[in-house]
Image (cartoon, rainbow, N blue to C red; front, side, top):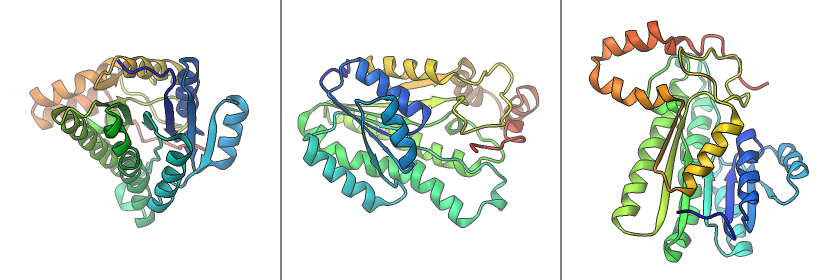
Length: 266
């Protein structure tokens, strides 16, 4: 079981809705220090006004050197980081041919490389202490293809594959470090503003999914999928021929048209 009491917690994407909720729950559970990283400095300052107990630092997660410097400073200050929420993420919601090279690289840098670099910065100390928990916020998009989000989906498929591999690797080596992979459907945080929810797959409320993730972390669950249809997706993909699955997902449930009216965060 993972305990937050007296632990040092780092949350990337800390200026966002989920980041703030994770921070509140960690503090309520007695965390020693809760640190928020984000590139949005004003957003971080607002979050600190809302949650005075948190520590904040502007960190550009698309820049590996910035991650390494911030991690080094944090380890010197706290000694160790026990729980890491790799929560930061961005989306490019448009047809692939319309995505610029800069947009593609930015999504991969923030959604994939930053997750690995942040984890790599704190994992050695966790292994040394034989204690730690890494929570990787992937997406239901790592389980199913979707038009107009190919770069985002590709980044989340990478996160899921890496996260699950890391978990098994650490388990086999008996390092005492837990890894949880989170694959939620659309969450009402503004990131996917304008999307149309698929049939029988409601848009998740941030408060409910955040609490569900926190409780799952406390129980050392390895995977979190929500809502129910996301849990069913791997089974359907496994038993249905691809064209049949495309028909069910696209025509019946409307998954492939969810991004048609996407506007994104203003």
